[in-house]
Amino acid sequence: MTDFRNKYGPWALVAGGAQGIGAAYAHYAAARGLDVAVIDIHQGALDAIRVDLETRYGVECLALRIDLGASDMLEQITAGVGERAIGLLVYNAAIADVGPFFKPGTGLDFERKRIAINVSGPLVLTWHFGRSMLARRRGGIVLMSSGSGLKGAPYYAAYAATKAYTINLGQSLWHEFKPYGVDVLAVAGGMTLSTAAAGYQHLDTSTFQTSEQLVNEAMEVLGKQPLMISGEVHRAARKQLDQLPDEQVIAFMAQHAIDNFLGGKPPEQAI
Image 1: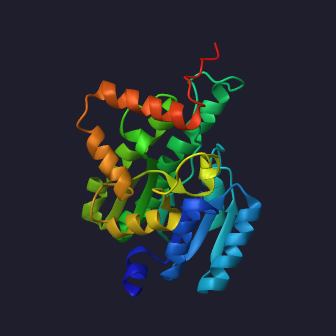
Image 2: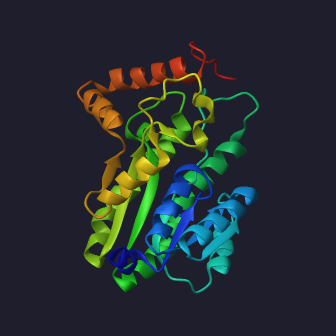
Image 3: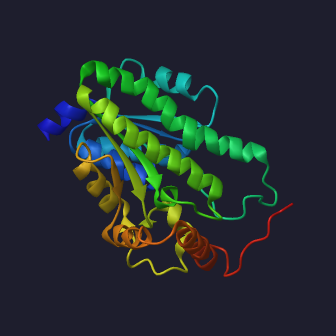
């Protein structure tokens, strides 16, 4: 635990950290002696995790209600964090959905918000907190992505594109930051039993990971590899897909979305 704190302490910051996978990262860090700053939009969940972390682990938890899609989100975060030294950054926030590219009732502002949270968010926080980590020559950055970011994913198109960015950013910085003692990991998450899985009731969840299993797996390989595809089942499936032509993989991803989330038929574009 001392080694973990020396490498990644004294503070962890988890963006999108009040529930689900993000909360599991917060618990992981707190259990190893790090104080934790949790950023989320849900005040009730923030209040709950602050009390839980402080009571259970005896650490300090800074709970910050901030919209990560706001244009001044970095200014809000730096004002809240103050002089606290962030040694571990986890970016877990995202806007995710399934459906046609042109969705009914959804305009371009929605997609701009997605870009702000899914793309600008990890870039901005890595830019800000990564610089001080490099100067201290220690630290860690975990960027949560998705298996949909590994290849074209119809009906997840905009979301998957943002997750591809996260994977590329994490893999690239793994190499760039390594000489400075800073570990970077991109995590291509698979199906996980988390708060984001509320719509999975109709699926067989027996092969899903828990949030804690995903986080334990990710933190075990932080510093050892640039990308982790989470879960044995997910890795085995991706290995099989990698043997196929791109056209077949993309068609498979489309059918997966149709069968599991879209009622068994391709959705029409709202034009």
